[in-house]
Structure formats: structure tokens, C-alpha cells
Amino acid sequence: MKKRRILAVLLIVALAVASFSGCGKKKEKEEPKKETKQVVQKEEEPEEVEEEPEVNQETFAIFGVDSRENNLGKGTRSDSLMVVNVDNTNKKVYIASVYRDCYVQIEGHGLDKITHAHSFGGPELAMDTLNTNFDLDIQKYITVNFMNVAELVDDMGGIEQDITEEETKYINGYINELNGIRGGTSSAQITEAGTYTLDGTQAVAFSRIRYTEGGDYKRSERQRTILFKIFSKAQELDKAKKIDIAKSMLDKINTNYLESEVLRLLSTITEYKVEAMDAFPKVFYSGKIDGVFYEVPVTLNDMSTQMHTFLYPTETYTPSETVQSISAQESAVAPTANNDFTQQ
Image 1 (tube, rainbow, N blue to C red):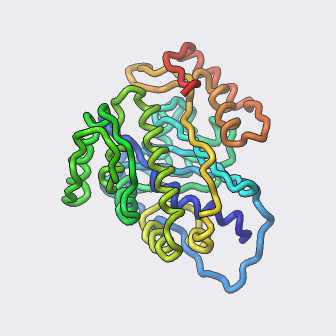
Image 2: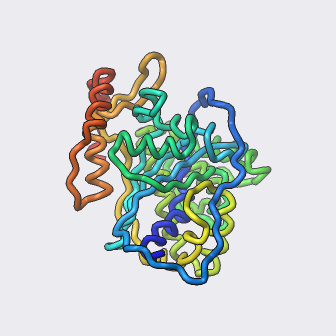
């Protein structure tokens, strides 16, 4: 397989560790969870591999779930969703977060929160939902449980992060919860604003903070901040350490990438740069529809256009008839926005 195509897979290992949710809100009733017996596709490594035509860019999805049973498939909501485009020509990475409560069309279920697509039909339906609503062509995915993120941050020796006074009001509740969930870890409380080297529990707790000013937008920003710092830390590790971490992670994720694709050229991850990270929608109605809280893009046409401009800055884009039709349905429900983050 051509080196540049495999590099997209290598980036997944580093990027996936930050694909986890705030999960701070009260959980809604979900479908019964089902076990995921095999979480990564494996293949025998051939002695010689035929090279494929170079792929200049590849777009894939990362789903972050919050599952105490480590169920990474159907039956678990993707509380964090990221679309990643890898520009292999210029060695740049673009990461777009989609809010979990974003109001979209889900095949067979009508208009609903995008987080429910993964629960209704696993990563396959979640990918289809992204493709249908935003005119994307995602064929590959990775699903990771937030618990594994904590383990990986610990393996990397922690990450440095500034904590604000407002964040100290919420982070310790999550630290206490995660200490219990992780089997009795004893990560310290953070009671003052300042710069800290966060361990795995503290890093995940930081990413889960939801109720500060800025709500979901700030939570997504925290997730992307942690992602960037983990990615940067991964670049500093020696090849042996990277491979050890990757092998450990492969047993704990659900992906349709092959194991050999991930491991083959891991050391070349240092060549890539995270060029930009952002969250969508920028303009939306946040509130209840028929008694259920949603974040409705105003409009879906604009959101899809903004995502394409962000992920593929050199390309032109016009929303498809499908996107325009869904956008019209959403506008009939919520024609006016009450949130605008276009300047953020």
C-alpha cells in the first residue's frame, strides 16, 4: 500500500485518543447494549505489498463513546464525533467536531440527534449519517472509549494544560467519578487555576467539562485542545514507544482499518501537522423541540458549506439536493438561531 495512504491510518492512533465526550449531562434511555467481540480487523502481513495509486487526501470519522461495558458498537451513542481530513500532499490535518446534539436526518429514524446514529446502527449508520447530511464520502472509522484515553495519556507521561478558575468548579466532580470508574485510581483534585501536568484521569475530566460559559462549543474546544497536545506528545516519542502504544490501543478500539496499516509506518507521524481544528454548526438554534433538547443548524446548507470550506480549503462546494431538502425540513422547525459562534 502506498506510504501516504497508510499515513492517514497512523494519524488515527494519535487522533483517536481525544475523541471522547463531555458526557456530563443526564443520560437518556438507550437501546440494549451488545458486545463487540472483535474490535480491529487483522490480516497476515504479506512479504511484498503492491503499491496503490497515491491518495492525495483521505477523510475518516472518529467516534468517542462513554461505555462502562466497553461496548464500541451498536447500542452506544457517539457522544463525540470528529471528521478528519488528511492532506497527504501538504502533510496537513484538518479536524472538524460535530456537536452531539446536532439535528440531522438519520436513515430509518427521521430527524434526530446525530449522537443517536451510532446507537441505532453502529459506526456504519453513523458514517452514513455524516455522508448524507454533509455531502461527505467517509468510508473509514474508528471508535474509542473514553476510558482508554485515560490509559493512553498515562502511558505518555501526562500532558500539560492550563486550568481556569471557572473550570476548577467542575473538574473535580469528574475526577472523583473517574477515579471510581477506573478501578480506584487516586488522581488529585485541582482546586486552583494554573498550569498542570494532567494524568489520564484529569485529562479526561477536563474534556468532560460542559457547564462553563460557552457550553458545547467550549467543551468541543477542550477536546480538540487535548487532542492536539496528545498528537504533539506522540510525535516526540521514539519509534519503539509509539509501536508499543499503538499495539496496546489496537486491542481497545473498533475500526475497519487493518492492523498492519496502522503499524507499518508509525514512525512517519512526525512529518504531519495539525493545521486547524474547529467545531460545527457555527450558527444554530439551541432548545427543545417536542420536549427534547436539540442543536439545530441554521441552516444545514450553511453548516455543510462551512465544513467543506474548512476540511477542503482548495475546493469549491455546492450543497446537494439531498442536503438542501434536509435543510428545508430543519428550517421549518427552527428558522431562527439563538447561538452564533462564527467569530470564535
